[in-house]
Amino acid sequence: MINAIADFFQRLFSPVVDVLGVALLYFHQTLGAPWWLSIVMLTVIVRTLLFPLTVKQVRSMRAMQDLKPEMDKVRAQYRDNVQRQREEMAKVYQERGVNPLGGCLPILVQMPIFIGIFYVIRQFGGTPGRTDPEYPSFTEGGILWFQDLSHADPTYLLPIISAVTMLAATEITAKNVDPQQRWLMRLLPIGFTVFLLQFPAGLFVYWITSNVVTLVQNYVIYNHGPGRKSSDEKKSGGKGGTSANGAVSVQKDRNPNGQQTPQEGESDPAARAAKAAKRKRRKKKK
Image: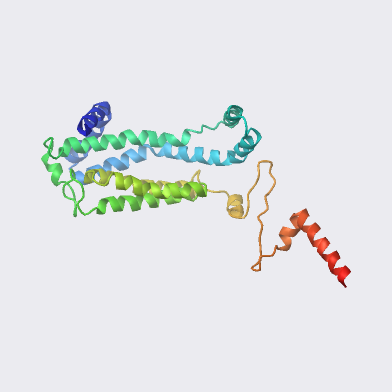
């Protein structure tokens, strides 16, 4: 049953498999690179071609963050009318020119490539117990402790390295999302690696290289590109933000004794009234 499903998807993604297979053969046979390096070179080129989509994804995420105050306002205003809530949110997206699905585009493009690489490895290195390798040298084209690219890494070092590099790459992005989403992003590398634990070593060569490239791209985007925070955001980060109407929200600060600071009391009319009443009671006692 599993093999039948695998064969079905191989036929479905055959155009992607053919293109990736030709590119991999070019690096190995024409340029003379070993198989593992050919996979690395192919991955770097693919991720470089997808870099504009990654930049677009970050811009879409930033636009969604900027719209969050308006979205919260719409949700609160039409809390009991889900249909009207959706209509008003769609209207805001249209007016601002924001596509809520724009952040999913790179993932949708990368998945067929990831699946295609998997089937190229199955084709070149064979399937243990089912098919012979199309290129026998592929089973000896690895490096260090993983010489056979068509079999799983018996030491599980490749899956661990994959999880660590993926976590490092997502950590840069996690700093720019809601805290509730951060832990999901941090748990994703673990779940993803456990799922791929028994996959061929050649696939992990692709995935680890892709994670390293993502790490570099994220660093550039979030420190020197569209994902970089403005000076105002850095100053206000963690101490309140700006509301939709431009008013600055005030964070409540307390001293070590748990009492409100003068800044908080001055900004809260109820606190000022309570203090005035307290002073009057003290005067009466005197």
